[in-house]
Length: 228
Image (cartoon, rainbow, N blue to C red; front, side, top):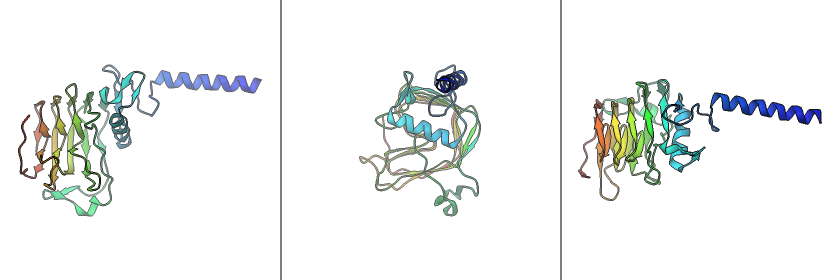
């Protein structure tokens, strides 16, 4: 009986510690609200964020694709040589790194707020799988009308798709992209998705607001233009 009571007390203390530090069940600090955003400090944190958002998961009544996030520090997706050289992918490193999972899909667009906090995401890499292509490619694949992407700086990065491709966002369906920048390469294979191809350093297909953003990367010319 004493052992059982001791176990219960230990469990109670652990639960209190978790609640006190406000760490969500999967490991991100924060509560996902405006005053207490989820904090992103590593590549693995971004993987978790994309996974939750793209499944439409929720926790304590907060949908992950509608939550608030804040980047805590610079994140380098891999160490080593530059990812891009002379407006092309560096073949020495492209086979050694994992493709980024774009945040936001057609079914579950990102409708939250992501504050880059002036920090940098370096060597972000995405190359679509020809056997399972994704129409919208970028750090964010699809953002919705309630989304705010701000102060995000992406450097030395490479996004390659087959339809709608952008450095910050593939398809902006009514959201806001503010104070962001991109350097690297945005490219596609010109096969298209539903006969539509659109590329952009900041956003591939924009039907929302883009303010105070800078693209210094290379964008492979698109054969088609699309209008909202």
